[in-house]
Amino acid sequence: MRTQVGIVGAGPAGLMLSQLLRLNGIDTVVLEKQSRAYCEARIRAGVLEPWTVELLHEAQVADRMEREKMTHGGIEIAFDGKYRHIDILDLTGRDLTIWGQTEIVHDLNRALDEAGNGPVFEAKDVAIHDFDTDKPHITYTSNGESLEVHCDYIAGCDGYHGVCRASLAPDRIQTFERVYPFGWLGILVEQPPVSDELIYAHSERGFALFSMRSPATSRLYLQCAADENLAEWPDERIYEELRHRGGEKVAAHLKDAPSIEKSIAPLRSFVAEPLRHGALFLAGDAAHIVPPTGAKGLNLAVADVRILYRALIEFYKAGRTGLLENYSTTCLRRIWNAQRFSWWMTSMLHTFPESTPYERRLQVSEIEYVTGSAAASMSLAENYVGLPFD
Ligand code: APR
Ligand code: PHB
Image: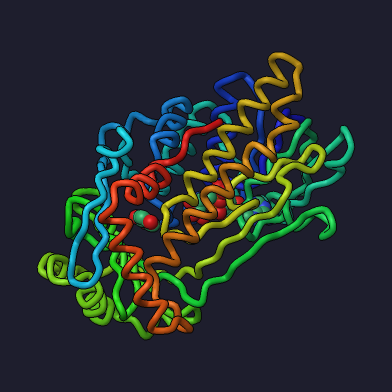
């Protein structure tokens, strides 16, 4: 098989890249190790920056989102029995969209299928070869058959555990990492959102987040131990803890609806530099992970794609390689901004097992400052809504 860009991974990054390139007449093949049903059932992120929404329009997969989305002009922070609102729309002139990653993946798969260019699902033993030469190729097996894709470029959109970054000799990449001493236990429930806005709750018993997916569906999270056993968390225990951490306003609205999905995710900050290695371009979770507290993971993956697809178009349409050469540097500026913001939100809102009483007082003082000072609120707001691209 011959294509222009071989893409490994059919998460939001790989699918968006394929669709945007297709709309510009550039041929791609997407290889995904999981089944389509598995990929479309995964419950992941749900808060979109205006830039991400804009790119979904550019990719012509925004119709259903525009009909069904919710929008938010702010967030609430709960602490010390208080609820403080940060009016992001008022501060920045822009708002956030609630639209699940699951829905984005579904619509992208459908759009690619309709164009006769859907991903190859259940592609096993994917391996990338010769990306330092002008003859890069990808091998895989499908239904027991060994196949090869020859291409100009390879996009490694295969997430944190993928094969592309793992194919690089350790001395070619520099990695930066912070593993947090806790995780998030998340549930999806059929119950209307407890508030008009997302509530980020700081409490001595740990962080909690009250988010949503639709007017009838809530997404709720609790900070938990990194090695927490899900079996020890029946719904009743989760609700009891959510009530404690969320405070009165939240407790009154929680209906104890049974969970539709329940999972635990560890929290990690991670960057692998650079993002380009010859003909291989890493994008999305393959190159970086942020803790979910700033809602940046999906937006950052899509930001890489925005930069990469424009660079590839410049190459294929104008024969220029300048944007491709700058790809890694351009992405890394945004990545490190998001790293700093996500680390800061995580540090401000979670309970750290090793923190001293002094540090815990400082945390509350910081939340008071961020929610009380126009300058500090603005700093949170402009990052949360997404900083401008260069
Ligand atoms: N071969 C083929 N596909 C692979 C391989 C492999 N060896 N390894 C992983 N994959 C696939 C995964 O099954 C997954 O579908 O690559 C895809 C990567 O998708 P994501 O993990 O969703 O990563 P990305 O597209 O970068 O999107 C990042 O996802 O994890 C969330 O919070 C994160 O919202 C962010 C977004
Ligand atoms: C979510 O709805 O899943 C969500 C929202 C905000 C975050 C993280 C996750 O900061």
